[in-house]
Image (cartoon, rainbow, N blue to C red; front, top):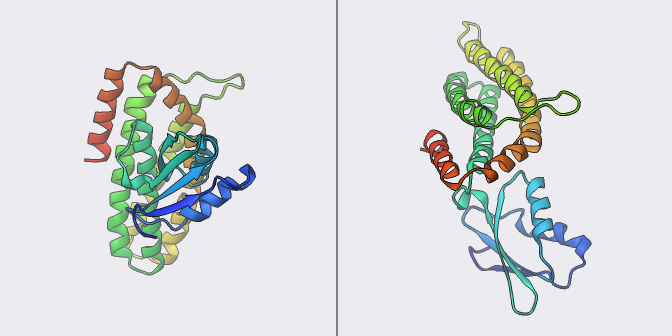
Length: 235
């Protein structure tokens, strides 16, 4: 696949086959590459569904052509700048996930000193991430409990504290005199499972509420928050 040259005409495909067809065309798309599709109808629903399946890893530009066909250029998310605060947070989730996965890999292979160093970086990155979510978003956006008394912000903050506590405990476990892959590995596995479930819940329950609230905020306030979050998580 060559950057900016791959083209796929899906105008003759049945609607029920479109999402699967797009997936197989883009599944091996590398950084810097794009795929251009031609659809017979607006692909918005298909693209949003596929992006949810792929954990928000896609970005696209859509234009309607004179013959009522829809041209869509799909990029990897990393190839375009973040568009808003929630986009930055989702990208930071992926960055932290990748870092933690590397900690697990290094630990399993017995490279404990390097794993420990990376675990420290993970914990520091986690603290910055929570600074944005706790000190900026939770304080600014009220998410009242639902009919069952469930407050998504309060629940997520409790989970954040548990994740941070576990991370600090794992850091300390690397410093034990008898630290080994066998002693640290199970702790990493427990946190890995907790992280995965937490991020899925957060991105599907809390992020939509934050997005709705931010969309109603004045443009100047949104821009100021966006710049502040970029300064903390990207610079």
